[in-house]
Length: 165
Image 1 (cartoon, rainbow, N blue to C red):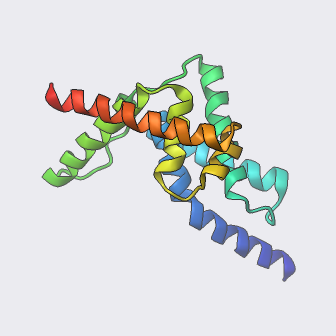
Image 2: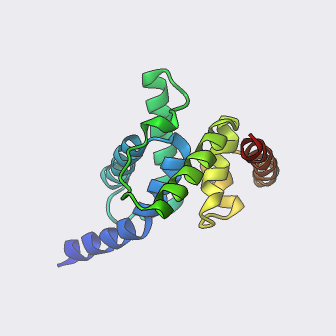
Image 3: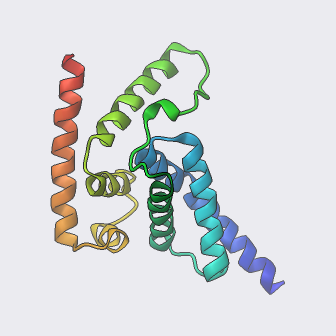
């Protein structure tokens, strides 16, 4: 019975963070399938190496970030293109508009520096404090604040140029 409680607790942890982790990964990679694979791999690594009782979101996101870096090293590509996104949306006009805006933002994020993109993707959900983001990325909290501000300014400029053209 004790083992079942650990599994139930880990399942609740998985349910609470799977979407957040997936959206972080999709913002980071721009690739639906890759994000899905890395999300599953990250939860599996966390469970395998730390057991069901270790439910630390910062550790999970660190594992996921490292898996993205591993993938980039293996494929010798540091950035994936938005064209790799799968089209899973229905054909309604509203969803098409949302998807286009999403692609525009993803494309703009891909133009940021790698560290800025990582930090901004973590900050976008609002689930992590600057301290937690600093721990995941491996820089100081003050540097996180500066990087987030600069990344947002760059992103606004990039999006402003794309809307004008």
